[in-house]
Image (cartoon, rainbow, N blue to C red; front, side, top):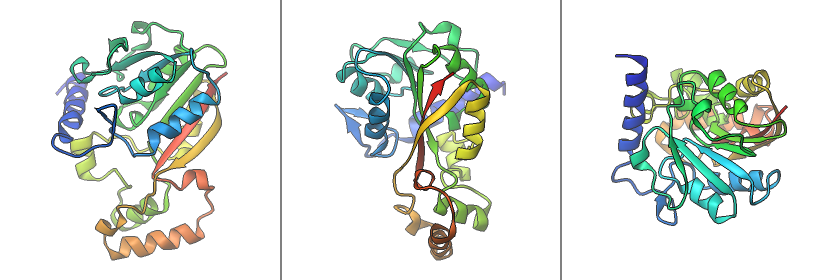
Length: 246
């Protein structure tokens, strides 16, 4: 299978894997992320770019984040692989494959880019970050999140099974989680792509679903929570960061 066909198949599998599930919503649009993530990302954006700013929502899905930010007064553009999935009224949409050279197809520059829970689905994170940097002027903002493989539960899972939290075989094949990135790795990639990290947050409780992982993982998770030296911002289920283009 060609790389493009494979990436499209993964994205389609992700889209279909939520059929029939109860999801958090914003104005009726499904949110494919932890409950707290979209409000937290909105707050990070507000601290650097005020309403009226031009914002690109990357990997927009059904458009819940695009609609939230549009309601807050931002001038939104959204992009994703599947036009049919996007349902946010009044938000301009540009279809794009983020595994390709996509920046030239989007109407930049933007004051900010929001890329929530998308980079772990893509084949080359540094390529994606360079493309996003090309859409921003100096001082432009990137608000990005990814599953946090450095949290205590993820550390315990890796010790027991050699797999990170949210990067099991099922997550790989059904969710398309193909690229685990620790905060340390992602900071380096951001710096090499022309960004500097300004803020970071840990979002969500990684222990919320740990009961399903077995007693040994739960015990190890508690031990790691006690002894690791990570800051609180790197202990959540999801790592959320605001980076500035330099």
